[in-house]
Image (cartoon, rainbow, N blue to C red):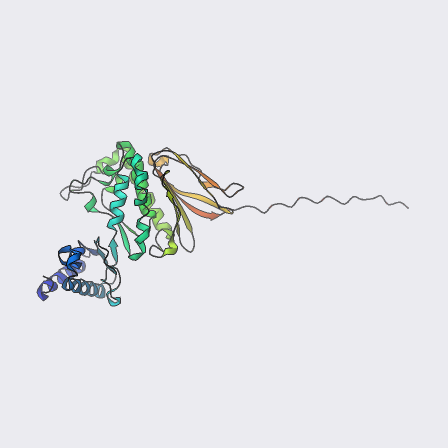
Length: 352
């Protein structure tokens, strides 16, 4: 099909029409792997005509509208999907991280007792992340066709789904890569998306759903206000694991960084209360930005807004069973120690 000039011209013109006339922000191309390889079968080799079509279309659209977003929904390992066409790539801006989406939802949909066995489903994405410009998608595909909504997927009973859901979204927002959240997920809708109906806004009358919306609102503001969460998404200097092998405790600890700030994230996904000690914090302190178990969001935690290290440079955490916290790392403001007052010189009585 893509060997025919009239077909390619129609597809390119249709894409340009939607962007130009309806002012779409961008386009997502579905099932790109089925274009890259003949009928999606890698064993049959590359589809040269389809690859030529992708490059020509992406290059043409970007030449006319440089600010649009072109995203590829592709689960293959085909290289340079997000490299410029002029540099030999396919010309997309972002590639949907399907592996991250599948691994993350499988982990969070499991009961707590099974999560240690799946611990590295939440660490594996960083093993390949810098190969492409990945986008973290929790899209329409995840809330339709009998798959259940994001909150419904959480591996707990009704009330337990909310703390898990809050932890999921904080993990998503602090993971490198751009984010995609689909309508209704921001207040924990429990009905699958239906294009013929509006969202179930009446659910905001219920405190658990309204506080979930408040949590997502606060998370969005924090994301915008702190460049460490987005400035170096695709640079290895922007992320650092602190703990990525606490399998038995089901704890995850990592940093996000920019030139002006360092953010610290700690997740407890064990289903049990956990304690953790962070060492090597001499001269530092942690200021809390967000706690998913905060009472404001229908949680149970009462935590200190500022954590200072002890005399050995250690900071101690007591973490709720399903929770995540985000801190900013700052220098400790310690006043200079006062020098002890010197003893006055003893005056001797002069005699004539």
